[in-house]
Length: 470
Ligand SMILES: Cc1ncc(COP(=O)(O)OP(=O)(O)O)c(N)n1
Ligand SMILES: Cc1ncsc1CCOP(=O)(O)O
Image (cartoon, rainbow, N blue to C red; front, side):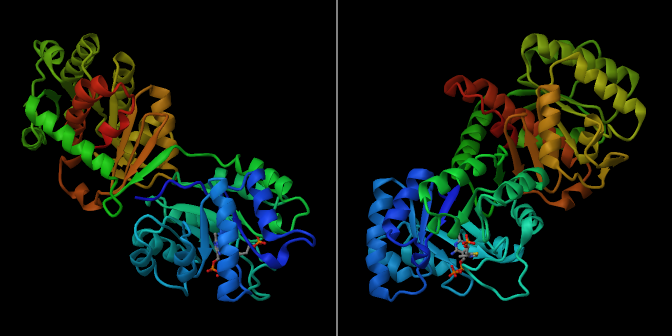
């Protein structure tokens, strides 16, 4: 798991830029007092012994202020002074080797000059990446033709690694005159919920006449980085806390075998019932007008899937939904093909207003249709087109409907309006199996049942989104 480090104002040193009359140690201390949260010792001109001496001195200051301290390029120096980690370049030792030498507890950062390098770093388990220089800078000259990554390139970098749990700092030519523009640009243009974790500077702090003041000014701009409250989960970098919760939830579901009252379409009834049994639930596929209220009242969860819509089914949905709300039974609502016909969309909107829906689960076309924006469309029961800003779509709709929205696809996006999660364990080929999405509705229902009856009860924690996710 990625380490919980604060790299929001990341100072990279360069002794050659320290103003006359001051020492590097003094500048680093002033900078920390002004708001620097992370320090990298990057000294290109000194020999090994001098480097180690500087490292010991700067480490002491960082330790006093509880600020992490890493060494640029040199694993031997990091080991010699027991630094908190290293920052590697693409020509340096690989992340895997550095990890095997330094052990699992040291911070490993690496420069990613391309999106591909960034993805490779995430897969190798880097804690953070530093970008290619955003703007040309005399601190690290790269020739006249070098124009820098720019803010557009930075946004593309952030979007490219949105599915990984790895931090990102922008570096290169950044100062108090241009930083606000970069921050605002990222806030406005990131599309996949992953924003900057921080900004790294050399000259804007080290060469400043007052490092404390310069750091405070930069910190106040960095505070404007919009924290997108999202979490990205995938199999490559599992979050073991969540894996543990899945096990606990499955155990409880199997032990209690909750009744899942499922009003679903004719196509998927059999598969959905079997999937429900497989993970320990007890399915009941009743939709007759005369009995849905009773079932909804005694069920652990009600799943309403409008796939086989007709006037009579609509009445059953309405009665089951109202009865569930009255009994406090959670409801999962699947607006199948909501965007395909006016009749379906009108029905969905009316049902959503008629009773409390706990989880709204649909594909991109269905969720876009209900939200009235998003970009995907429905072709029959399938979704076509892509959603440009999936996090924005699910979180706005969740706020608007006061529910949890779960948008399924190769990547699932889930939001309760406060927190959002993207889940990267799916596959687009699942769309080729009829009813795979509908079955998810029942699985969500069971885990929600668990959350509602056990987790929330014992933990008094409103983090139920995690149970929709699992
Ligand atoms: C935070 C951060 N990002 C990028 C760099 C550049 O590292 P690298 O590409 O290894 O170049 P040198 O620093 O070795 O010149 C960095 N040091 N820190
Ligand atoms: C080390 C490094 N890597 C990319 S740009 C850079 C130097 C950034 O220095 P400055 O903040 O003075 O532009």
